[in-house]
Image (cartoon, rainbow, N blue to C red; front, side, top):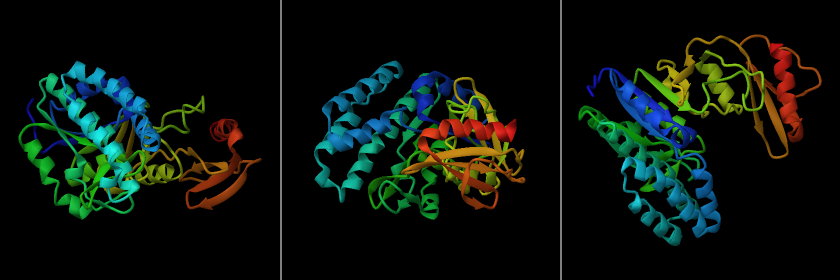
Length: 348
């Protein structure tokens, strides 16, 4: 593989992609690497973070065995040795007192999902003849704030980005753990979905031509396609629209992922299994409304984001309104029906 360091692409693979489309993901990196230098960011395999959270609550050895079997199946296919990770995981599980707080201990436990993914995916690339190295973001991404809700210190992280630069200059693909950072020598997580944020940071600090976020959906839809049967793909979305929709509950992208791109690096959302690139986030958007939703403590909130005039939706109580968006409060039991009804009113 020949790398041209003037053309860099950051590509992030979500947990569903790594669990269900592992081979397609590796082939996409191989294809992108024909004319670009590629940096990969990975999430934990789908379901692993939830299982690690459960493990932190009850320390059930059955969960540990289940996780080891899941990752070993992949490890055997790609020729990876992951025994050291599980030895460390077992030690951490039994010794929470070695950490400054329960939350610091939990964040270290949660780090194993991404760290295992990086090891496995890097070995898969090696198997395709692509020189690669797994990179624990602990050594690159500096963060502050509360454990579980880390905030990246971009200036300090920029001082360490040379570690990634060096790997690229040696003609290798770095496979970086998403979701993780370093807070005073301890691993800290960046919040659920934080791997998107990691990818955008890599794009900014490496001056990438583009950042691609690959998952099990093709991009940003007019509403959640898993809940709204008539939702359709939006090919062009502006930075502002994407950031607002993400902040109001849209699942396709982490709410912090747009900010580092600084209105100059395009963000592409696509589906790993078909290599379908569905939505381009840039300075230009179609202006089509986006319907986002999130569940709150007692109720659900549906948000309508639009750069044009927002129509009145009869029968739904407005809970708040801002520049370019309006939110409706509904009972959780009515969420699915309300999403479909509002989508029907907006798009006919």
